[in-house]
Amino acid sequence: MKEKISAEVLPLMEDFYTIQGEGFYQGHAAYFIRLGGCDVGCVWCDVKESWDASAHPLFHVDELCERAKVSGSNIAVITGGEPVMYDLTSLTTKLKNAGLRTHIETSGVYPLTGTWDWVCFSPKKFKNPDPTIFPLAHELKVIVFNKSDFAWAEEFASRVNASCQLFLQPEWSKEKEVLPLIIEYVKSNPKWQVSLQVHKYMNIP
Ligand code: SF4
Image (cartoon, rainbow, N blue to C red):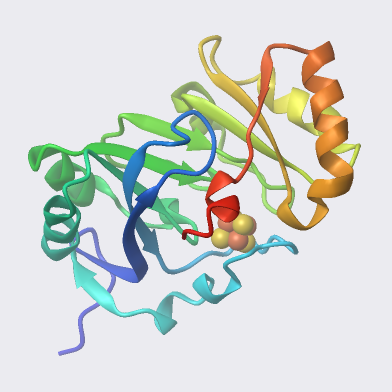
């Protein structure tokens, strides 16, 4: 019988050991587990091939965990696609039992499952987040595509918890025009920090 997606079996687009290029953990070695499947539909998405979950092979969480463990990384980053589409309880429990920190990158469009050491919440304009994500976010990372996104970012900053780290990151294709705006904005509003996708400068995944 063909296996189905469950808490024990998840669609994997790719997994790889690299350097976290963005946000609070920028520069740290991290094992990325990119799950397939996303229904958010960002027009500027740079991983559109992730959207169709059925296009990606299914893996048992034990195997995903073993691959992360043998990499030698201290951190597993679960990303997508949109990983909160799935029950991540078993995956995160097993990663933690194997001694890895569990980090997630999510637009928060469904309630979060699993046990997390770090939640990076990156809201998207194309689908509203589930309100349960706000108190859980350790990091708010807003992708800035144009000037109006600063006001949009502030709406989210007012809803996350007081200790949440706030990042503004230029959308990659707009970086030349948007980065100078972000720099000025952060200078005027220093609760925010600039996040750059440094892995793209280093030519690593
Ligand atoms: S949420 Fe992420 S994977 Fe999904 S469309 Fe947006 S950028 Fe792409």
